[in-house]
Amino acid sequence: MSTNEPPRGLARNAANYGDLKFALYLRRSFAKSMGYSSAMLAKPVVGIADTSSDFNNCHRSVPELVDAVKRGVLAAGALPLGFPTVSLCEPSLFPTSMHYRNLMALDTEAMLQAQPMDSVVLIGGCDKTVPAQLMAAASNDMPAVMLVTGPMLAQRFEGERLAACTDCRRYWARYRAGEVSDEKIDAIEGKLATSAGTCGVMGTASTMACIAATLGFMPLDAASTPAVHSDRLRIAEEAGALAVRLIHHPVKPSQLITQKSVENALRVLLAIGGSTNALIHLTAVAGRVGVKVDLRDLDRLSETTPVLVDLKPTGEGYMEDFHAAGGMRMLLREMRDLLHLDCIDLYGRTLAEQLDEGSDFVDRQYIHARSNPVSPVGGLVSLFGNLAPDGAILKRSAATPSLFEKEARIVVFDGLADLANRVDDPDLDISADDIMVLKNAGPTTPAGMPEAGYLPIPKKLARQGVKDMVRISDCRMSGTAFGTIVLHISPEAAVGGPLAFAETGDRIRLSVKNRSIDLLISEAEFARRRTGWAPLVAPVRGWDKLMHDQVLQAQDGCDLGFLRPEGK
Ligand code: FES
Image (cartoon, rainbow, N blue to C red; front, side, top):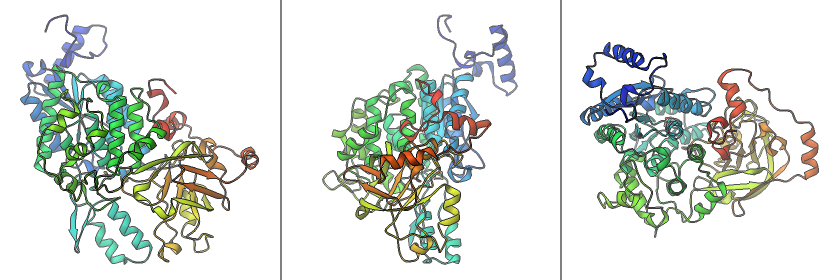
């Protein structure tokens, strides 16, 4: 290596002993204890973020993916070195995995910065892992390949196919309504998630995989290839080879995440009827390089982007159907005129070039033609009004159109504990015509903005056959859930947003047509209620305190303020 070239491989980021040569000598000595030859230790290094964890079923296949990535790296002439990071599995974390997305992003960014590597393969999958890794890559700006674990397969059970987690919610709602027995709900528990991989529907994990591919962080086919398909291992091997290529032909995250590519990703989010959570995550990822996602822009895009993919939770199919139908390539071809085709991927290919490759086969059952869309307009709309001055979101593709224009009395729950205590109380004063409101569950609360926006229909109404009601909150909803649910009310109640002052018996007007959501009380009444308001008790130490003090609101992606380029 010429002395003018920047340090590479193990020579990067030397530990600081005040003697560079000694630091590198020591590093090589210790690396040799692992049995590497001098020739191997002189090669460029590809880091592999290994997120396997016994707490993360969605990452069950990570060890074999790591092996395949290593194969690809070695064959391409570099040294693969795996390292662990925080790993987040949606149902395994208290109070919610969202509370730790920024911790994983911070951990990953720090390890990319501290350890000697020239490029990295980030292995993610479950909902919060892919955004956390993309946020880290964006801030570090090191060439990074995204490798997802891939979706699980649906399995047959008593004549129908089941996969996590839309079917989990569907069956649980039927159980609450008394339509499914204790025995059957127990039997189904073991039939919902039966293979390795992420949730098998277009939930948050699948949506984020589609977005990562749209941004160029992985090949288009890699977004939907099932976790257990042998192609997934070939994709991993290719990811290793690509990471080596990037050392010699760098394409950095800041070249991939641009205003244009983010707009493409928003179009994809809309066309796939994707998860509302992905909007928060994409906003956070883009925010790391100073690209702003504006909710009013989302609304403009939503009016001109049809839903073309027919998958659960909004439609019928599973991710394996989307993949077999032609996957991202055929979807993007169908919406070609809506996309910025000059955006590039990690190979430096334009999106136009990527779309010209591959087979022409498409299964119209799952990827509709523009002339026959699942819906002529996009899956998400943003709402503004005196209840949400900084915006809120509604997934209209998963909602009940007859509830889009509604003014009704509200029943308010003060927080998650209040909801749990009262929602199934037979004496709860609520009717099917009311609007349910949950507050104090936003990003700064101890609850950490959980996926509790899918408020359960009170049992006594569920047993009368009520399937949907307007539900409003400052928290999130699982990407696998459905219903007429207004989410991400901002500012949240816990920072004194207008939602804090909503009381049972007030009325709210929701108008999807006008994109509005308003609490029908006067300004004078708002002012009167504001005088008696006090914030929740703040956490005093640790990660909870850092989140409370630094986390931004939903329209800023719930990132930590000090991690954005502009600070808080
Ligand atoms: Fe991991 Fe759904 S729980 S992707």
